[in-house]
Image (tube, rainbow, N blue to C red):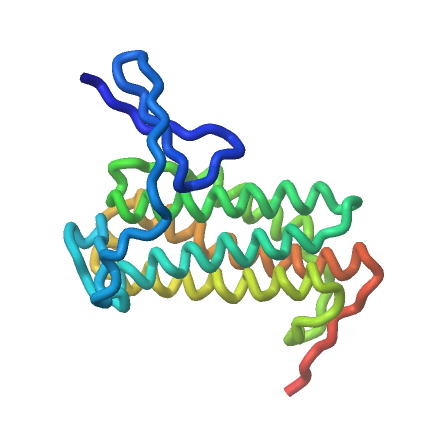
Length: 207
């Protein structure tokens, strides 16, 4: 029997479909398992159960936080900034793809140098003139994008902590890490851009 896990648009994460030998089976899973009540969790990257504060779990958690923070920023964008919303959406997908590449150690290489270049192009196109250090402020969507940028930096640090010894020998892992790095740069540029588009001027800090 050949079994494939598939998803359907609009279905919650706990609602999974199995496609087995051309027959679609609707399988429902609970969103809780009760297996983490002892402070541990299964980590595919570690190959078994680990404490919830294990570096591999921190990486998964940081990814969850980053894409959620970007989603929150998107929800605050006014309708006329649909172009920014599309760019934020693509960054969310790239973060998922980069971490998947890292966690499979390149066996599923879902990012490329073209993605790194796209992020750099977004940064260059959206970046406005700023003075020294920007103090996150202004429109709620811009401030939320700054939060997303800071959380994405944490995701990058978590990835380095897990893969530090492997980055030098695997170009695919280095590309994935570059995607994480350029994503936070693009988010910074987008945050400033959102403020300017909506008539806000960010506060700055002069040491």
